[in-house]
Length: 366
Image 1 (cartoon, rainbow, N blue to C red):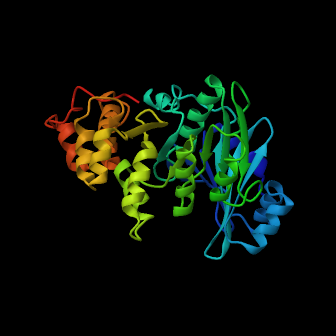
Image 2 (cartoon, one colour):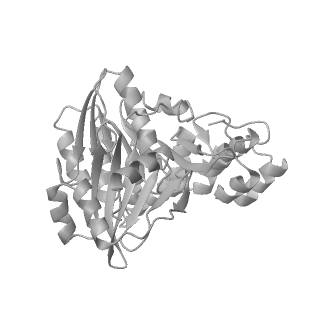
């Protein structure tokens, strides 16, 4: 019996799947509440896979697939759902990964994210980076922040994405959305030409290289707010990655420019909740004068120590956020330890012997 793709999407939607995996020669798989689940369906044969491709990919995408082993695009079932799609090869066989993109952009409150993220949207210039591993909700967090600006400020927002994910409806702001390979060639050129399009806010899908970072710095230096993502696990690791783009002797000047423009780094993870679903743990590092001083001296350990001691919402560690989720019964002790990058500190917090600022009685419930 032929594979019914449309029926499968409906079932995946009802199961609240976040990702769908299709690979020739394997049965379809789903990601639900952060876990990969294999279905009991028969493996997809070559014709099944080709039928899926013909259904979801337009002619220009099919032409790209013929000459490339990696292609990103979007697929939409009107009034049902949108998907970010990646085509790739797995041991020489074609594979599709579909990430669900909600029509409705959730608010920061609905995502149970720290209220301080809303304060970051009030900057008129600078760079804000949301970071985390793949599937940690970075795009959704940024979309919530952009939509908050859209609802409350009279701005021109330009998004540059690969591909365009969330769709915005103009509210108080005017929103222009541009996709790589369709409306602009690269993130770097997208930022360059965006500066000629009267922007106030520029959303850059991802900072992948030095050229994109330099373009983002230039945009922020000329009075624009730039929001973007990076694939790192913590705020300090993000700073190391940024400086790693400039290992040619120009780092001192770059550090100064970065410190003058970087407003905050937000790192996040999604943790499985006890009752099902996922909860966000969030680390926040605003670039305060003290943080600037440590960074100029490459004292990254002191940056983290300052975040540990802080009692303010603009500086908080991932462990304090994870511990808050445990304290309020949203996650288990095992989950807290599994997702912590500083397990010794987390063990101390769980045993009640940690003497940091945010121990057994403090921490943001997010």
